[in-house]
Image (cartoon, rainbow, N blue to C red; front, side):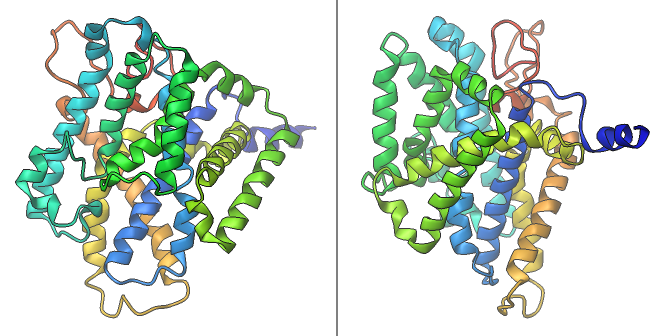
Length: 375
């Protein structure tokens, strides 16, 4: 009997709340985003990624839909606010972070090795491109700009029936994901693709929470099997992702499977670190590209690194992902002492500082009705 209790305490957590799975999902998602970017940077220096190309098709299905759905779940009260309240509680923080970190990124690529410039190429060092970031997003910080625009869209549709925006965003997602609708801008394309998940989070947050809290093992297995079948078909016929509606179905299934698994995995003590990472997602997101760029610049100096070896690419991706996540957390532990890097600074002295990571939602207690951006 004593042995059983010891094993239970070692393997299972006794401090898990009913919504702590949210942090676990965020932790898993940001790790996948870092891995995805690591793979792209390594590919840019000619390093063999051991078939990671098709794996990226799968990895790209989960993180952003999950993040946007969770972010939407913390925007449920914006429709009851005036625009002044919306600006003060949400929009100015998103816009400030987007502009500030776009400037930091521009300066970084002026002085640091431009290995890949997170997909922007020469535009990463173009002053004109920096001036146009509000009309032509060019970097991975499009996600923060999307939060700004999505929150504004939900507010503008506040008096319309939820079905209206759900249908509009669903159609836009279907057309954008399949390539039928193309703005010639990666940031805007992805915004159109993921708006649906943000809207679902904003309108159906109670149903999402309820579905996860009522999750039974057989339901979790069912959604995982459904996703596995869909992904199996994707590996066999990658072109399926270009069929209108197919990718949206795959994204819905992978988010459902991810949420279901998180509701069980969050209880495992050895995986507590995933939730720890999940509580620091925005900080990791803001700095990880810089760390990847510098590390890959060092990797590129290794003689013969581009020679194809069966497992070299995947091993490098796993190793660099772990290093980048750890360094991102360590670096931002010190950077957060400079509060204006993460928090809108132009506020009355009596106002409480807003942690940056709340842009992605939090399971911790909130005050003043500011879901998603206060603790």
